[in-house]
Amino acid sequence: MTSKPDADARLLDAHDLALAALAEITPASTVGPAAGYLAEEDGSVSLRFENRLAGYPGWFWTVTVARVEGEEPTVLEVELLPGDGALLAPEWVPWAERLAEYRAHQVELAEAAAAAGDDVVPGEDELAAEEDEDLDDDDLDDDDDDGEADILHAGDLDGVDIDELDDAGADDEESDESEDDDADALDEDAGEVDEEE
Image (cartoon, rainbow, N blue to C red):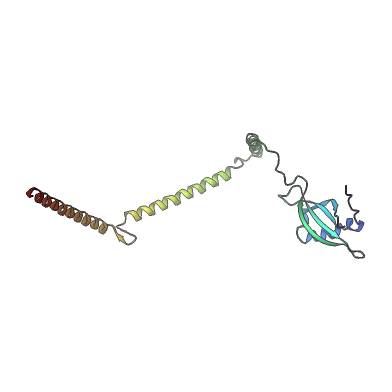
C-alpha cells in the first residue's frame, strides 16, 4: 500500500496564484470556492475549485502548481476536469413519467399566466409563429407549382420545340409503316416463288 506524499504547505496556500491563472482562461463568474486538492507523486499539488460553467455539473477547475526548492510556486497546468460520477449518465426515467412531469409543468405555467391576467397561454406565441412559418412555406410551394405549370404549358421547353418533336414522331411512324409494307411485299413475293416450284 502506497501512502500519499506530503503536500508542500506553500503549494496548498497558492490559491491566489491558481485563481490568477484561471482568470486568464475563464471569467471569474465560472469559478466557485475551493474544493480540496490532490497531492501528486512528483510533489506537485492540484488545487480544485467548484465549477459554475453551465453544462458541466460535477466538474472542477483544476490548477496544478509546483515549486522548485528555493523558488516560489508556479503553475504547471490549468484545466476543467470531471469529478466522481460526472461522466455517468443520470438514472433513466421512463418516458411516461417525463411526459407527466412536462404536462404538470405546463399546467402550472398556464395557471400562473391566468393568475397574472395574461390571456396568452405560455407556448402559444411559439405555436402561432410556427403556424405562420408553415403558411409561408405553403405559399412558396404554391408559387413553385405555378412556375412549373407555366413551363409545362409553354410551347418551347428548354429550347426544344415540342411541335417539331410531334412531327418527327409522325414521320417515324410513316417510315415504319412503309417499311412494314415493303416487308409484307417481300414475303408475298417469296410465297409466290415457293408455290411455283
